[in-house]
Length: 113
Length: 225
Image (tube, rainbow over all chains, first blue to last red; front, side, top):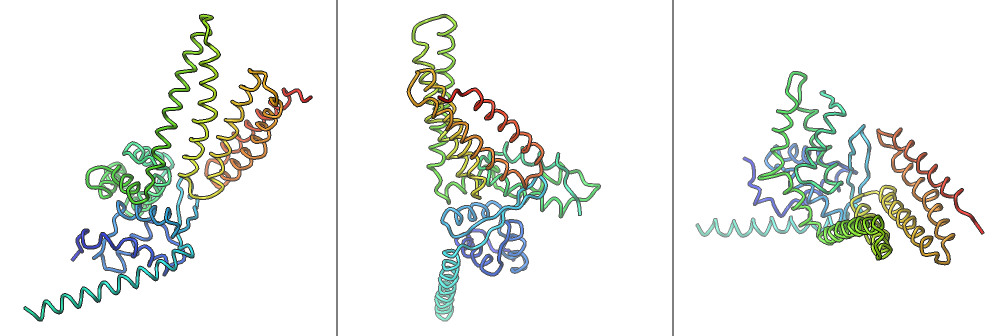
């Protein structure tokens, strides 16, 4: 089962920050492949959402970038800035709390049924 | 693994631009991403065009440009676009003033100097500085940010030096020296350094030599009192 985009829409920043926290530096294509691999294709991070998210994180100063020239191509690597590292922990914690709250809510409702 | 040719890479980049992606940074992100997928999926017997179209179609719902719109929306870089609009308007006004001034000059009509002066001031004080700032903001690393800023500064100084010379204002020699100094010690080194890692290194070196030659000849023409 692939999760619908509307369900994971608000989680992209958290996903990217966590990926970068676990890996020193990554480029866009590598991130999409890693997400597919880790979630067995259940979460598909599309290019149309990944790059706007990365640009937003960059403009917020949460990620730093370095470029590598591969012939005529330019590969941009992303890594967490010091504030990005702190933000990553904060977002992961926030999301874990959200999941447990949702779990609580769903369990309560299930018991009522 | 399939290796894309330089022509195929140029084709993809042109197509990304035609698709409505104006931010240079985003263009190169998408280019590398598409190239990675194509090099993974393409086989020697495949039709490049067919596989390319199929690949890039997965990137959007309606059109490729929506990725840029989403980027702008999330990054809150609307000021960047406002600056670009002002830059474009000042460039058009400057060119129009220059054309009208030239017509006035050909027909020896009064008012030539007003139009020429306006054209040069708009170009030197509005268009070029805004171009430098907007281009620099699209780059992600400092050496690459420095090139458009240095180019804009050198261009502005060159135009202002001409205005100073035409108007016989005091300090014109200083302005020319600043122009030459900016070209030789700021623009040329930053351009050479940022371009050194690129594939078209020969072109970068050639352009730097031309720039240094131009700046040096300008220096020889200056009469230092």
